[in-house]
Image (cartoon, rainbow, N blue to C red; front, top):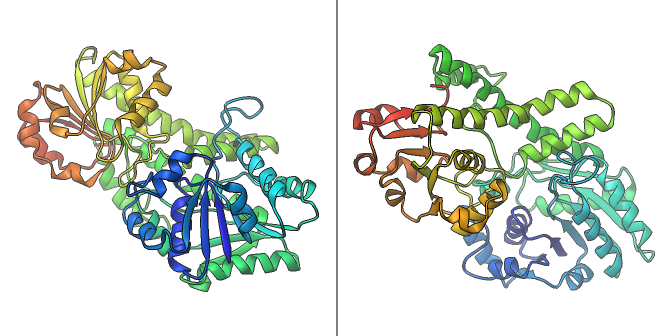
Length: 457
């Protein structure tokens, strides 16, 4: 089978690489209109950092895995087309701030219908609101030149930083399709691809609408757990309880479990907030205001946690950070990825800059161009104004030199291996360390001389 994926981002690239790796008889082509991104996929420096991804891509690239900007040819050659384009939250018009912006999905559908030279299976891989498949079908059939299109929903459940492992050993693969003979045949064709390496009992087949909604609800449920434990972290700090001990005790309840009960400065990434707001908009659209309000509070709690963290920093540093150098350890939204979308670090840095702080930022995988671009967007500061107060460094020890405080915002494992006595010796005193991920050994840090502040401790 010839397979095409439109969109070479965090979902399309790794997913297609795994399919090519596991299904050497299939030809897989990933296309994108962004030539720089495609060039990166064809180079030795991939645009996405994921542990193990290099080996998967390099093992198949040029054999049965190809990256190209020739979208039309890839569509014509393909029997199955995955749509894996960006679906950001709308910033304009009705639903701004909550609804998903589907303009790229619609443009994809129109492009497929325009250049298709035969019947195609079109697979929704982007995170989409419920009933998007219906809209896709209308666009495709209205411009089809009498070709038939079967629409499937195949949402991704990848966690950045563990995407390769999640693809290789998924908890489940979800496929939604129409309850028609041709719909069943299309579902079987996609299921047969995954069955090359995924046990059949983990391949779930449902209707289109259930598949689309399941993705939103899964992310909303996970984010809700994070916001719930973060709300309790605030209570722990004022009562003297320890959030790690509370989470451990609660997580021992088999009905609850321990996953996603790690208190922190807040969740980030491309999925959780976007999908919750999409769910909120969907509930509002159908008049379910109380349900919408419930889920929106999960986002509000996440924003509160970041604001509360910055307030604690400012209060500890004698109620002002103006003119003070602060070292930021970590800018990615989580470890083992270079993705910064909705990272808590963006908002913590934004609020510190609003208080006139000077920042020295280090992240092992995020480059300075990405960091500065995110901060320009978040703060509205021009390049010169930002450069005067933000320095991006490739050495954590240089970042901490003469700093009043270190703030840990990403849970990179390497942060646990640093020589904190050395770091402390070059900092201004009293030297503070704010552990936004409860990652480090606070007792050992205090014995060195740090004033240590965690979350919920």
